[in-house]
Image (cartoon, rainbow, N blue to C red):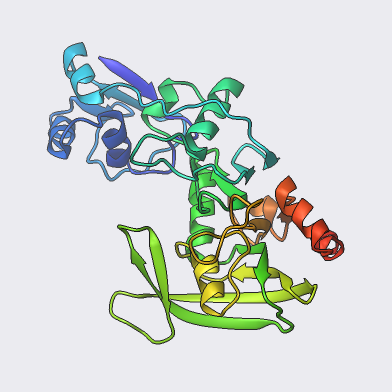
Length: 322
């Protein structure tokens, strides 16, 4: 017999969802059968699987060690070492300033991503244990392209992860980017379009008119300053599609400087000058109510700032970072 006590990172979910994580190798029919036979109980009672779990609940599995080991599998421990530039952290969430060149989420080829670095950080700090990873994995809630830098929100607790995910789903957490683009732009503009993705080449195409299979996109930009050749833009991402800002601006004739996919890379610039610099939290209730109305910013990378100085646009940057 094995017994598990539900902790804060496991509470709030259905019992069958929890069992699917604990016994990840078992077919669902197995643990439903075990519940019917009272070989799996919740708080000493027969369960159906649709019960909502609360911190302190206890689960008993009347299974042999061999059966448990067979169906639980090895504990997943995606962790890797990498220093994190943490802009904000509390018991529920983290805001991380991701450097250019780092993947936001795990890749099929096993390349470490911010998720593995986050897991390693929380394990080393003692916020998680290897055993916790059976039923809870910290994760990021938004994604930035590999060579785009800036703010990424991550859930440190299950409640924080759920609350953040809901904000991104409802699009009420406002995200602003800074980018340097080719050409001169003088006026604020709200642009719409439709996006299709070529998964084989990992490239998107923007269409002015609706098209089968295309996703609607919306972007708003605000020119901050120009030098007669290039413009520093603040961009509000309304919808969050793959490569949206890069492709949408390029379709308007103003590609992001240093972008080899939708513009052209410069000799001294190894990645696009696009940075997620600000997140503004809405008025929210519940777990993250203490973040209502708060704003967080992340400074641009050194290469971005150096080029802004060369282009004589750094003064406007500093004014908008405040």
